[in-house]
Image (cartoon, rainbow, N blue to C red):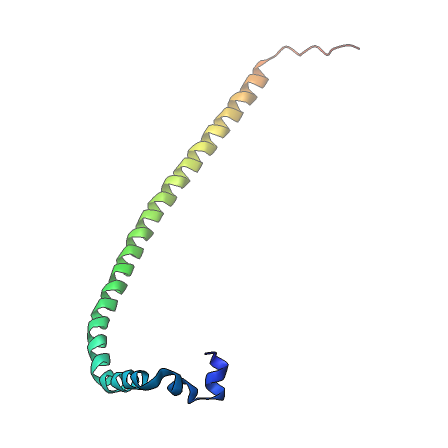
Length: 106
């Protein structure tokens, strides 16, 4: 049954569900005041435990990511230092050659 039909004919659902559907609905309505507090009593500690676990996981992940970030920064600094050293060596080699290079004639 489409949702549109329920709004157009609200009692059509009761006709389709029949007596068993009505009995289940009334049973749920009568048991709801008992079942909801029990479920809330069980669900609240369970949910609180899930939240605590999430917070601990966040803190551990945060610390691990900070360590990874520091390691990455160290690697970048080392790579830059090596590149600077290579450039200085190349400049030193270029400055050491005191003899001018011959120019090829055409």
